Structures are given as C-alpha cells and as structure tokens.
Image (cartoon, one colour):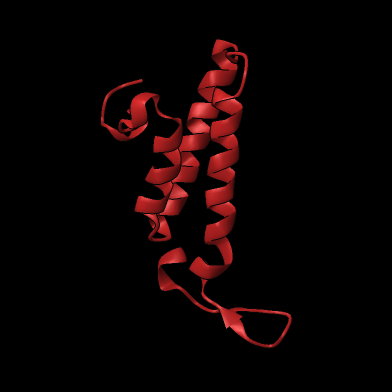
Length: 93
C-alpha cells in the first residue's frame, strides 16, 4: 500500500521512498495527458471523456503520494485563465 512508504531499492544499493520513486512519473504523466487534451485540435467527445478520467486518476495518484499542490499547478497551467480545474472544483463535468 502506498501509505506505508516502504523503501524501494535502487541499482546503486541505496533506497528511495515510494514517493521519490514514483512521483516524477505521475507528474510527468499528468503533464502529458493535459498536453494531449489541450494540444491542437479538439478531441472527439469520447476521447475527451477518456482523457478527463485519466487526468483525474493520475491527479488522485499524485494526491496519494502527497503532491496535491504540485499536481494542481500542472492542471492550472492548462485551465482557462489559470483558474481551478473543473474536475477539482467539485462541479460535475
């Protein structure tokens, strides 16, 4: 379970916490999903819904790893006018 934060061995014999190991991956994934959603032409409605669900799921992964603020910064970069993203505001999509 992520909440237990057990160390993950590294190739050099040291160890990283689960957060140190996986947080960069999830933040990068969140950035890439936002680029897909907002980059260029508008995705069809089905793809937009899939991207929204993937973005929310990845945001939740970041929150569970203790990086809510960092994840919200990524989402704000792509929100119109830098406002709070719809999926985090409690409003239905």
